[in-house]
Amino acid sequence: MEIKTISPKETQKVAEKLARGLIPGDVVALYGDLGAGKTVFVQGLAKGLKIKRHITSPTFVFMRSYPFIYKKKSYTFSHLDLYRGEEKSDFESLGLEEIFNPESIVVLEWAEKIESNLPKKRLDITIKTVNEKTRKITISRNK
Ligand code: ADP
Ligand code: MG
Image (tube, rainbow, N blue to C red; front, side, top):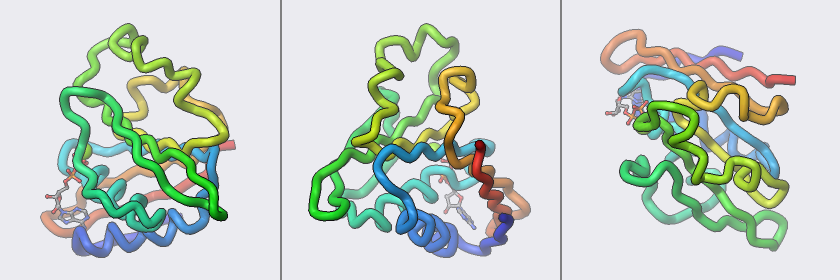
């Protein structure tokens, strides 16, 4: 599926809508250059999951987690931004095996940095900058 947006707000709306179809255990991998709108998209996902806290990119840590409610139970929304990692070993301390679990929705910026560790079953979302305000968002289910 391919969608064009012409403002950050619109990109958030796309993400918000998508979030309503997510369930614990889902993994969302985000791809796109710096400034494409990955963090904006994550903010929309969080909004869709009724997370009230403002989401910014975790800069000095690779991950931040937030609780959200699904069917009256509490789960974890984990937001990873791997931009600053240079090699695989930088991510070892994260304990990737535990991050992907049935109690969590995990969303990753710069997911390609840990490509071989990504669960095969996931949503791949690529955001391309068309011009200052226009983005092309491609959503595909991997496996
Ligand atoms: P990334 O996380 O991919 O590096 P950010 O989400 O932090 O990018 O930043 C995206 C920037 O692009 C923001 O400053 C945002 O206001 C701007 N922007 C302009 N148009 C759009 C759009 N259609 N969708 C998303 N962001 C947009
Ligand atoms: Mg970002």
